[in-house]
Image (cartoon, rainbow, N blue to C red; front, side, top):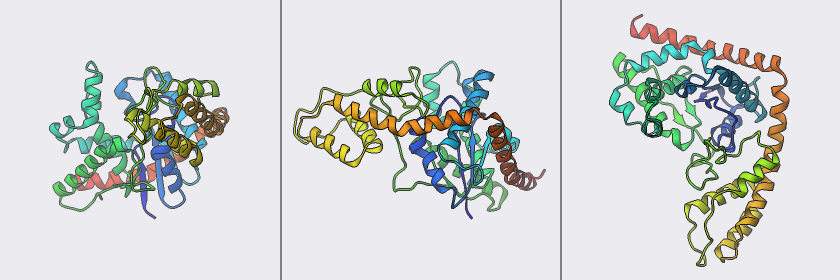
Length: 329
């Protein structure tokens, strides 16, 4: 059975549709066929200095959401990144062979540094090596990732190859991106550009815990334009993104109907948004109810986390022991 690792979701709040339709849904599909490890990336979240209370609650929230989305603790190892100290040790070893120039060229580092010039910390710079440690600690064959993480996965392969070259052995493999299609999934945000994600206003994403009223409000405020002026004209990005959401969340007939209306210049964005809102509510409601149910059972959540950490430790401790021996410790 091949192994698989996801560079888990940072515990900075609730999961949104972009998380679900990205790596998470694919990972859930794999759990019957692969040896799966899935974690909550609480170490990664320290780059933004979360308050301890927020960190604890968010870890719990994400864990409940994983299970509500269909992840089976009996089939996969679900654990918090901080429950696996071996990851930190491998992170240290990989940092010794990672170079400043390549870390500074990382797109996500440059974006974060530009957005938060007062918080350019070492953890942010070495984010790719910690992500590599998350993957290589279990010697993964495949990693379900979104398009924004492809560069990090490529860097993981670079670090693995460099380790093998330095120590003269073929120890780490070359983990590959895994997806149930020819393209990696990217769910657009409601602001009309880029991917769905958390924002200061919270209006760019539909979260799995949003209630019906909140979903309607967010979607009705989604960015659009003044409408098409020519028959069969190409959709601008802001509208193409909205149609992508319709394609994912609504029926094929609904998508075709609005696409035809756009092509003949009779589309009414208000009608499209109303239909999208109702179909989104139908999709989200079961997840929201299940999350609330799981969150009410603290004993169950603690058991899932503990058992998951034990499974992960068995794999990780073997890797670190072998790596230490290879290095010379």
